[in-house]
Image (cartoon, rainbow, N blue to C red):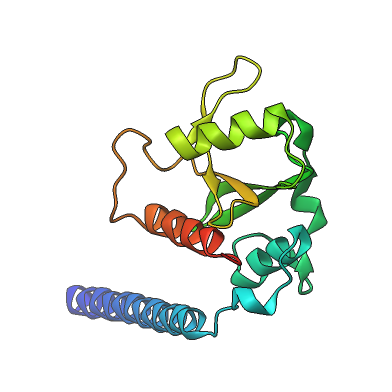
Length: 190
């Protein structure tokens, strides 16, 4: 009789244990479904139009903030994630570096504005190098990959170390995100 009672007790404990696991799995499935719904809402949210922003440096930064490419806080650019750059090193009149994340991975976006009517030697050489090679060199440092906007007024440096520079996985979310950022950047007031 004791063996039967022990067997029934073990079977009952196993049933409760499995029921608990089933509940956890159901809860996890519900959270995953909610996360998927949230992501679907994000991708269907209306995107910003470049024409809604002024064709100046602040307009470009606000446009990137609205698109979610740079960090915001309470609807404004998060200044804790912004570094003012010495734009004169690349011949630009203004420049900032924005730190952000994409799929949990660190990304930096540097944006610069040029005065096309007043380009100094440094600006001309950087712009010419980016047009020709897609990169430039300053201060004997390794070449920096950069992009020019179609109107030639802005330059962007996009850094995501999760993308293999020599053999990028074009199907990765990081690669697709970078390409989307570049496309939005190039088309800003072209």
